[in-house]
Length: 238
Image 1: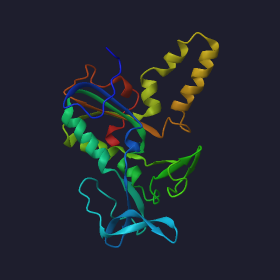
Image 2: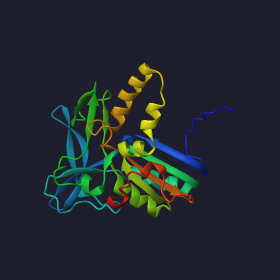
Image 3: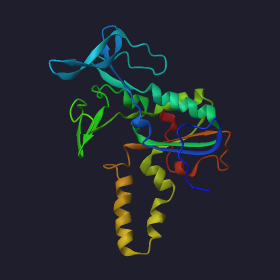
């Protein structure tokens, strides 16, 4: 029997563990801009020989995420209904098990902070970052950050429980990543491994920007808390 089976769709039901590492940020998001009558969705238009943002004519009807309606006109942000729908689907098909969501993002208060008035849309081309999706078309990655509060709220509506929320750094430290390093006896490999671990845990790298959200269904943790959240659990911020 093969150890890996590639699926084209989710099974009707299953029990087990789902690990989604940088999955949610890859789902297409909607970009919104604040106007006098509320938020409007931004679409793409072709004007004067180039692609540009274009506001839709009608206000965006939103009943899933609490948008910052006190924001000033011109405030731009993103929401991701597909991510919420994916969480809901997991809640429907998961009989019993655990879901680990690992991605870069914020709590809702951080996501919609007034200082983040240009949103979280980022484009990457040959290791260079920009906020312009209308260049290098088809050759650059386009992504938005994850709103973990919205995911947690949807999870509860979908029959899932929130088991923990932490930065990637504290999650890995709780799991004993330092012991993993010290167990390597080969000096060269230990040096290489140390460099890789720094990338994962240092605040200036991925340690603080990446977060881990754990969800469960019909699963009880004997100690009351998953090992990955023993050093830090920021669930109260969601």
